[in-house]
Length: 263
Ligand SMILES: Nc1ncnc2c1ncn2[C@@H]1O[C@H](COP(=O)(O)OP(=O)(O)OP(=O)(O)O)[C@@H](O)[C@H]1O
Ligand SMILES: [Mg+2]
Image (cartoon, rainbow, N blue to C red; front, top):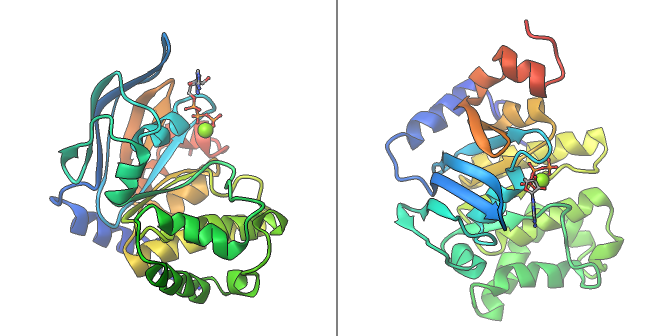
């Protein structure tokens, strides 16, 4: 289980200052994205630094998933620049982004239902074109980290519970040895108890492995409780940005996203 200090203001501040001045793993510099003639993102700028948890908040259709897909190379900007480690990645495909250290836990988990737990893990590592023995060793590490998956290694992924599929989606993403994981609503459809567990797990991955995380999460208060910084999107534009601890106290954020009257 995560340290009880996980996500505390002190540990967040420590990471934030450690990350300051370093080259961001991921950077959007005035990125605009269109679907055909319709504009979904308008000059979005954001950064994710090594070891940082960055939360993306916003209502339905505000552009959160579009931002994730653009980071992963599934969509190309119509203007603006996406950089990984300070380098313009242009229109490079998802495979190149994964090779550069990004990984994704996609919307609705999307494990391969007919494949076993173990086969799903191998697919996650395959993109790096490593030897099977290397992948097997890494899968063994994942089974150590997620003992529930170890008990189910030969079970078809489609028969796992929702929470177990979520765990498998995390483990599969970790198989490519990423430095940044993009997670689009990782707790969607999970019961409140599992939501807490998944967010604890995210904080643990961040603290123990130093992983940077870009997370879209409807449960804004929970997302802000583990995040270091946060960005609020509205109709494709970033309207608020700052340390998570400040946004959680911002009356506009509390009104719009936390379901609470402004203090
Ligand atoms: N493939 C597509 N073709 C056309 N328009 C799209 C496509 N995907 C998304 N859009 C539009 O882009 C806008 C942003 O969508 P996006 O999926 O990024 O929103 P979101 O913030 O993730 O919303 P939600 O909270 O509902 O998941 C929406 O108006 C949506 O209808
Ligand atoms: Mg979405």
